[in-house]
Image (cartoon, rainbow, N blue to C red; front, side, top):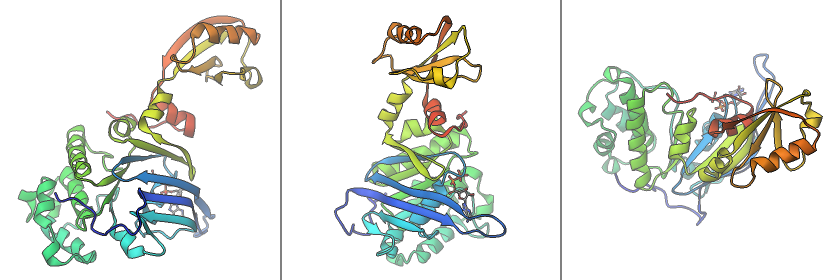
Length: 326
Ligand SMILES: Nc1ncnc2c1ncn2[C@@H]1O[C@H](COP(=O)(O)OP(=O)(O)OP(=O)(O)O)[C@@H](O)[C@H]1O
């Protein structure tokens, strides 16, 4: 595929997406109260990255994506896509982003080639600049170019959605839960295509329920919870937190929240009432931790350790359990 970047960047901003103090309040309607879906968030997506946007259901991910794509009107704050402000340069901003939606909403009566031509028309791509067959080939759909969409398998439909999002050659591609309900083989295939697009210069923003997937693919991860960014770090840094181990200490007396607060230690109380201590084995030794626990007046009965993973970080930051990939 050709290198993306249809519109020239208006500024020399190094970010593919830059969001500052972005707020969205959905007005009350149909008896539902008003909802503040985004509470003034800041996010910078570096150009050329594969950026993971994670968060529990209802965190505000789709709201953010829809604001960037020009489908939802923000309440306040600023957002730029590829250097184009969504208020000052809405057309260029929209032309700079392609969104692969969550739902498999494909018109069953169009062939993939027709669907791409139609989409290109919607984006005002001149006929001589259209790359319908090139995109279908890249998505492994060349031999289905003239088949009715209703005859396509689920995986093929998913790839057709990616193809549709690419017709205007946007430098930024957003994939909203692209592998939800997709089997492992198709998921792998889809990621191969995404990696290929990335290698050709497209910045990828991905929301996924599968933390392992985000961990493997993304170089930076933002975690959104209840309309706020609770973490935005290079994946390796986030995984640095993940390498934390957990020391579970059973004590003679019940652990109360007041007693669990031990200076210099990250502590929590487990559901069974034990004292859990998160520690990085590179930075802290178990013996030192145990000394501190004893010095705080605990009488230790039993000790065990647990490995943490991204799941734990997510749980720690959002209080929500996530689906693990198969
Ligand atoms: N059109 C709307 N009107 C009112 N409230 C809305 C609307 N769209 C979303 N919301 C609410 O805003 C909050 C954020 O929703 P959003 O769809 O952005 O979350 P999400 O992180 O994409 O969730 P999911 O992972 O389930 O797709 C939710 O509480 C949701 O109910």
